[in-house]
Image (cartoon, rainbow, N blue to C red):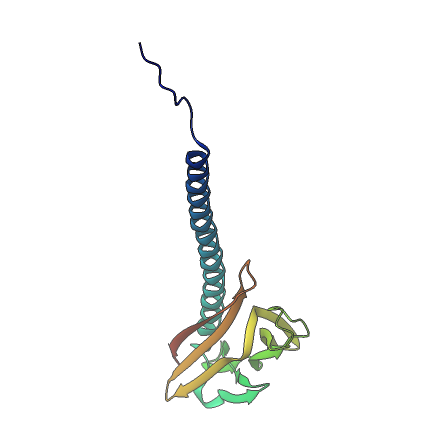
Length: 180
């Protein structure tokens, strides 16, 4: 019986197998890293769109009942400002209007997106001296309100920063028809 003089692998075969293995692991790393980045970005955008939807829903549910003759849209800090009153009560067939309600953009002293520029703020609602934050991470000029007869358009632009520090901006727009 004749024995094979060549038992085992040559150094070249081991080097080729190692190189192929390294390439496969490199490819798998790229796929996993890419999917992690995509997941992070998708999650950030989802949060921003949800916050924008909730903020515009809160605004529209109230603006819908505004007195169109007392609705005032102006500009402040590079964004729209909205002042209005809604029906508060009826007494003897007479409408009693609420105190003035204001939605506006307020610049923030915090650099949320980490770009070194204070170009972000909050959307706030103020009534009777009580101010509450409706939405954070609103970009400068991120609240745009317009009116066309009995329809009010609201556009809110928000941003999010993903795990890689990339800034993503999203706009949410809605329309509301005044009921009064």
